[in-house]
Image (cartoon, rainbow, N blue to C red; front, side, top):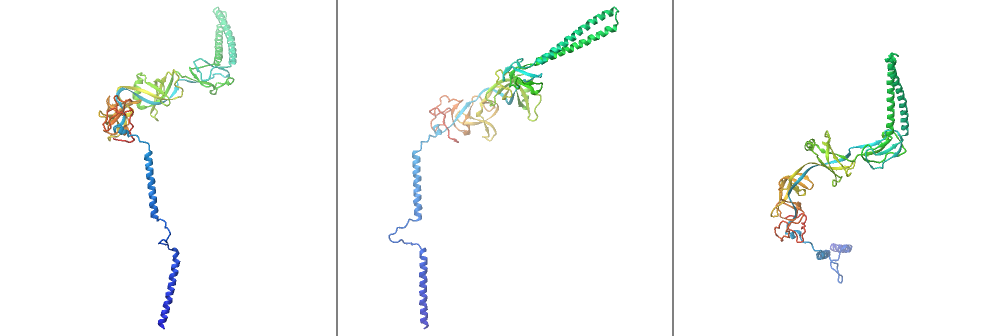
Length: 462
């Protein structure tokens, strides 16, 4: 019985286990993917296949684009360095001799010798103006007229008083002569004759006073007629006819400025005084040239006429005055100008174009240097000592000699010992210039067959 019970229980347990297993399989079935395709169904490609196909398409597009670009691209120009035989093209100039002016540059202001504000010296009504604004006038030309009638009347009154007192004086003088005759005859007392002499002196003083009054009124009448005090240009009219003008600064009529001659005041550093003062004290005319604001157009040439008596301690500058005749009127009052003071001239100095001078340390030494073109068309660094600069030329104290050839164009791409092709010499193609053969060391003055300077690629070096 016991065995039978055990068998039954075991059978029931197996049935329950089978049910649990089937239930678990049914619950997990929706989450499971079919690994084996069913018959008649095509499965999609795998992810690796899709990636490979995309890469193949991309590589094909890149190859096609490369072929199209290189097939239809414009032909590239030939390497200019190869066309010139692999040489760096440069421009050169010949070192020569000449005169170099030692010039001091300064800033100046045109300052007239005379600037006169025309004012009335008498009060009255302005009845006439005899000038046009901006007109060139001469000394003594009529400018304005003030009503002179009140002063003419006053003058007439003074002249009448003068005539009256002159009559009294004549009478007193006649009486004095008569009294002196009677005194000589002892007919009257001497005191009476002496008193008459004092009366004559009194009348003489009165006549002088009357004459002064007449002269004062005549001067007032003259003041009513205003004339130009200097020769120059008259400015804008400051008062119109009909106004009552008075002897005050507010009653100005116009301003007259002298233009010929005219001066320029400019300042130079005190360091130049040892060169300026000996020549100025000896009477040497120091030449000064005035240029416009842009320092391009020459306006006038003059000479130093005065040196200030002291140096400005705040700037270390001293003022100089230069005199110009200004015959053409190129200098205008208060105009800003650039000044060039000529101290001296260096004659037969070795000169080199300023553009040829390089500054730095190509060989580890600070200073100025140039690239010299040697006989074999190689370049070498030549340290030089420079002097004053005059325009586009600079004096060379040492390091160069007349006849040397220096590089003035293309020096930024050179180095010591580099062979070059001199395309221009002194601004012109060298004589007998021709295109050098490819791979040759080149000849001085080599050119392209078309006569043009070969163009070097940027930052190229041999």
